[in-house]
Image (cartoon, rainbow, N blue to C red):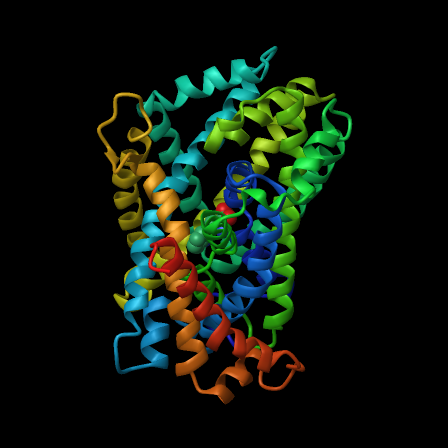
Length: 450
Ligand code: TRP
């Protein structure tokens, strides 16, 4: 089986798992997950999140990989090939627009990461405690010219990886850096053990308290699970289209889900003991990670070097995720309009420099980019995860569960019979019934209709 011999694609099973994991693991795990946990009362949220990952997102992820690998095409082309009639290919429209929306705020945080890496190198955080960092951060986001410049820098790095293509860019990069990120996170989690309020942090993370659970918690957990597994926007379809026919879809999916949860929980183990030890205000919200990490490095032995290493790896994790969003658009433009990769990337950069700048400016104190009480940045961040991704996930599940021929689906999931598909009926049942019913139910509830 030498498919992809004339096409750029992932060259090994490990390579494709790490690329998928690279897409999944990113700011969503290290920046977004901790503040979602904090906003939603801790441990019970984590439990619901893990259930969402395995019950809803794992089948949805397998479905996306299968669509991509079966067709070998971008999100638009894939749906058009599988269902030439009807409006299913419009999922592609949502995916392309959504990828722009998510990337627009994602690059702003990517820019923060870059800026904090630079500040760690020059020692700007030296001698600072958490409240000093908090002030520094507030002043920093209130200088949108600076933050948009960093965001653009982040886009340039993403483009530099993407320009080399799939195997030489995406795969090679992920294979080296993902294991490093995991290693460093483990070292930092061990360091957490020595913080004064370690157990308080652990209790917050692991002792379930269901008194905070409501529909909002469930929607946030669902959105976080979709966001964290890169679902709904076509990242996984696109990466699936670069996978070799002999790779095991089920096994790869479970590996990615497990790695994602592991990194998220490690981020929690690193952040929450520090939150309690350094009196970081609980309402720190989406700046939680950026205030906590520099403060931890000030009290950690070897903190200067670890700080640099950490922001470097966070940058890498963010880049490997962002490129999977941009690749959705690049694959679309290069395949559907026969554009050169360079031209497609230029278009992406042109759009993002406008939308990313708007997001950065919407966080300054004198901004008028507020819609319904939320900054554009918040709006993109919250609504994409809570609504856009689950809705697209719902459509994709219905498509794969009801529209796609059962035997072709089974052939694809089993790599034409190469792997046992014991769980296939369960997987298909989830796609057909449980996922759609659950998502619709959650939304009706949220809208107050039920
Ligand atoms: N999963 C990535 C993260 O956790 C972000 C991401 C990449 C994403 N591609 C996506 C989110 C597609 C939603 C849809 O940081």
